[in-house]
Amino acid sequence: MNAANPYDRGGARLLDTAAAWTLALLWALPLLYAVWTAFHSPEFSTRFHLLAPLTLENFAKAWAAAPFAKYFVNTVLLVTIVLAVQLVLCTLAAYAFAKYDFRFKTLAFALVLMQLMIMPDVLVVENYQTMARIGILDSTLSIGLPYMASAFGIFLLRQTFKTVPKELDDAAAVEGAGVLQILWHVYVPLGRPVYLAYALVSVSYHWNNFLWPLIVTNTVHSRPLTVGLQVFSSTEQGVDWAVITAATLMTSGPLLLGFLLFQRQFVQSFMRAGIK
Amino acid sequence: MAFTHYPAVNTFISSFFLAGKGGAAPEFVGLENYRFLLEDKIFWKVLKNNLVFASCTIPLSIALAMTMAFLVNAGLPGQAWLRLSYFVPTVLPMIAVANIWLFFYTPEYGLLEQVRRFLGFSGVNWLGSESTALYCVIAVAVWKDAGFFMIFYLAALQQIPPSLGEAAMVEGASRFTYYRRVAIPLIMPTTLFVLVNATINAFRMVDHLFVLTQGGPNNASSLLLYYIYEVSFKFWDTGYGATLTLVLLLFLGLASILQFGVLEKKVHYR
Image (cartoon, rainbow over all chains, first blue to last red; front, side, top):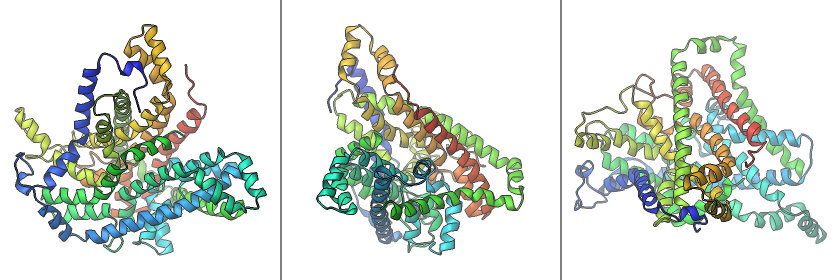
């Protein structure tokens, strides 16, 4: 990505650079600070000393103080299940919306669009009651269920599927492919970049989600990392900042690492998802 | 085919609607909840907080996002690093970064305090005083959102043909004139998209409250969704919680009207 515009190359560059870096530093500061604190012993939490000894002790302490292993398993399980179901449901729904005419289609699609605005985590009260009624409170399923038929996914994939020319469809049909085969062999491969973008958004969303999981879970058995971290930092630990930042970094670590590794694709897929 | 999936979509949609009707249930016990709502001082306070929250976070995060996008698009040295630092807050769990911010705000030895003391000011209890708590929460929200919105602006900026910039330069337009008259109008559709998202976020983003203030002190930093949580799951008054949810839905509905009413007509380039 090069600077395409001559104005972005011109005179005030030095000033721009200074401003850009100041802002960047400000934005990265919390994370840098957390990294500093987590890798040093508690007495260096509040004062900087370039030669302060590095330590992993905080991570060990945090890991021992709460069942983080279980939280990790729960979160990974949650993210995987939700994404898998989302991909299947959204693909099918988007295909139906893009290629078929059926009664109340416009209405149904309007309802999907409405869900874009009003996401399930706003309706916590009602959703909680639903979960209680089905009797699956405090399970990974109950955290994921409201998000499985994702409007964002349906919308995104529908837009993509609409751009597939009808001729491809017909050609495949002539070859004797069934509807599902066409979907699988023609549409899904063509939508690959969108799938990637969507998967990244979904994973980071559900890894980070907090309020809804907080409400439906109440034991170690089903809690995801975010809720686990909250329970951990509010009750057991008081003000041992070094340990808390270590736990904080552990919680966001895998996602952060994944982000650093796939930075380019990540940002680009977000961008692609943005151009609707 | 359509008929096997249509029910699946439909079930989901109706479940969504059932949820929406939650506000209707209290009507069977009369309008008691609504009367209580009107008399509920905390509700009005929280509503006011949320409006302040929205009117600060929305313009601030949009302005910052636009600035970031311009900067990051300008081919400055270390571009990749800049982009990375702006965007990183977006991928981190709000609940996790709130822990770090909590430390910044801590009285006596928090980072903000150390800076203030270094400059010779006296201590302030940032999160503990009614006048500052809400703004602390706002700062975290802006920090979290700006980098995310930047991505959309960046995408939009990269679609502006460079020839426009060259033409403006030939015409002798200044840099700021170019931004004001060419670039910013061209990315208007993105601004609307971001605006809607920012509005939704302003009424939805509460995770950091759990760590930072718990809505306090004296509800000074509480927001609508947090109050709904408190009423429904701390005091178990789900009927009233549903009534409050309806108010929240009203605001989100307004945001969607904005989306469909204005965005659908598309903002045309001047």
